Length: 239
Ligand SMILES: C[S@@+](CC[C@H](N)C(=O)[O-])C[C@H]1O[C@@H](n2cnc3c(N)ncnc32)[C@H](O)[C@@H]1O
Image (cartoon, rainbow, N blue to C red; front, side, top):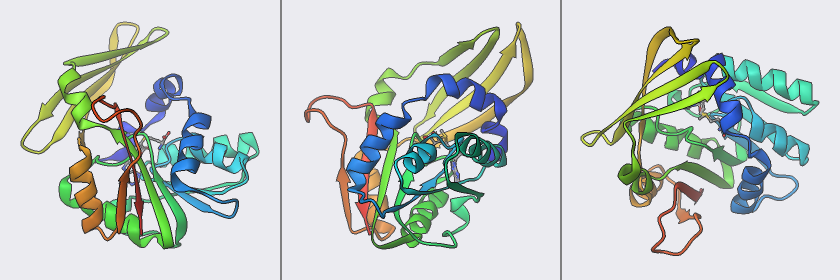
């Protein structure tokens, strides 16, 4: 997949209004990873860098990487504008481990699964190999068990005179949720439709993939009682 086609300026414009809970997410990340003041973080798929800026603001060493050039440029610009010391670079983690090792890797807000299963497993191995001894990997993804019974055919997001329209279809053979996305400006479609798909996972499958990638301990961190459905799948894995 071409990450620049999906994660572009229009994605940033629409998602700025949809995401935004960086400080709450970083509270959860710090708690889940049991980070100390000297902990070094790497965010895999950092997007425009909201979590990196919040981590840097709290005094952590914060590095981000992303396969989309547009996102990397935006993360660097926003960190500089906010006066936060954040390192960010372009890389597709499916192409192999990072040049340096870190204490904690973060994959947050569905930055994992935008590829086929073989590449997903390579991503997990690459993350494992990019962590220090006693390293921690924390993940936040959509929970397949929650989403599938509630899946809609389409989602429309309105922003001023613009619309983002996603048509959704789940493929049970591959476990991928396919999205056909169009942007509409003042009633007219802007550019071509964009197609992408994300692998939906429930905890047992993700746990097995993480163990097979070499993580030693995998814990489900989503709160709530056992019989309550949870929308986000939050997982902590140790090296
Ligand atoms: C939904 S955004 C989330 C951004 C950020 N984690 C946050 O919470 O705001 C997903 C990001 O992950 C990146 N991404 C997905 N797969 C990747 C991969 N294999 N390597 C690097 N970046 C990836 C995309 O380019 C995109 O910017």
